[in-house]
Length: 191
Image (cartoon, rainbow, N blue to C red):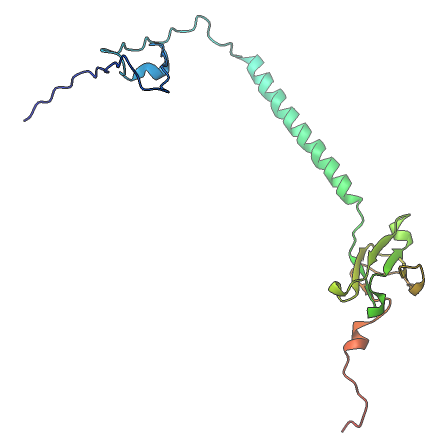
């Protein structure tokens, strides 16, 4: 069995440190002074002194009432928040009907404006472009609508009015119907 003996580390002090070296003095009581650099025998850290006054704790009925008050306040705030969110969401109008304006290539840059009583005093407007195949989609609440398409100079290129109410989940194609544009031709003789 081999015995090893450890010797304390003794730092060599250089009276002429290299240029640019910063000499930092470390207080022996600081937490970073736990290494033995620069000390022949590092002093052990002194134990922390017990605090003279223990923290105040609630005991008995006061503690119970404080906990009950905290739980009750949390439950009340949660109930009020959920009630507020419910009534806010309950009154929102669902925009689950759609008006799809499919224009002609001559309408590039023209503005389609959609109005109706379900929109209130607001109007929805969008420009036709070739990047979207001259198609504009408006998600609206159920109701009756009118759409007007105007060119850059203010000429009316197209207009249409929906006389019956657009129902929830339905679409209205005011200018071009996809069924009429994609149906195969039946001209000629059919055998």
